[in-house]
Length: 360
Image (cartoon, rainbow, N blue to C red; front, side):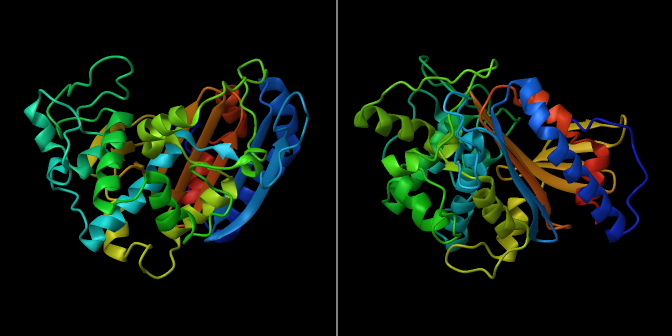
């Protein structure tokens, strides 16, 4: 969690913060078209939330460098690992309902073992998965899956953990993963532009991903069995396709929620969702910053403000999501090219920006 830039005086009023954000977004409006060209990033779509409202929403560039079709408000991007917090929310709701428990070993819920040969599998809980403390590697690839340390003893980012938890949720709910997500998150939260699986009409709305030169990455054709296998492996970890405005709907259910119901968390569960549970890092220069793992989110405690965040990336896709409960504010950025890291630097998401967006 890096916050570049020198420390600044704390924003003194709502008016000064509002003026700062208006100035920064005006700078984005002027600069982003040029920054996309400089970083060879074809397109970007962004949403800024403040006070529980979307106060700025823009689309820039093209969804495909060959066709030159522009990015529009309904252009869809891969959320990549930003799928994980969405799945986590639904899992916590299952725990709230008593279907599961965060601290019960997952082997008690399933008839098949996720791996053989290591009794430490019987220690792994949903909380371990959601805080990335299972001991699993990120992905096994062609290697046999192993537990690399005793669950709960340290943090190691793991998509395999989410793969395991997905298989358990499918068994306890008796629903395929895509149906579970549609019924429990996408439909009740009004995320009409979001899908786990899709048809041809939806596919036409998906932006093309591009490499670091801005060249489109050709998608290899896949068969239905291959797509099913991909969903079984990567579903809970990285399968969501969405728009920034749809993802903002999800974020708003955390920072400015509607009353609890069959799908929305109650206050106690929301507090548990964002409670710092495992320390990740601490530093004091240039300012004090402590980061912790909550339930799928990273919590950053930065002197006089706190926010939560998650990022997602894959070849040709990058996205960032960060938000604050105290200010009911947040930022979502989605792009379709590998030039994102350089582009992000130009956005100046520095300490001053975070202070003005998140300080209560």
